[in-house]
Image: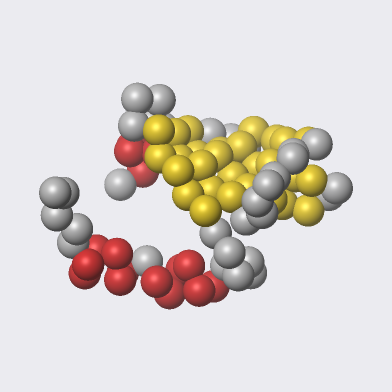
Length: 76
């Protein structure tokens, strides 16, 4: 079984609590090195934009429903 470092997880609690969404789903694709963060399930994006720092912001009816972080491991 993989060991979990709880102290590392607790470090991001303040940032998670500051996000204006009560539910957050994450998925990391290690092979593609992409982190998906969703604020709505199911999510059906009807628009998106790629930022200068390789983050895709996904929208549904003008509201942000998730972000996709490309090259996620390089942000450590």
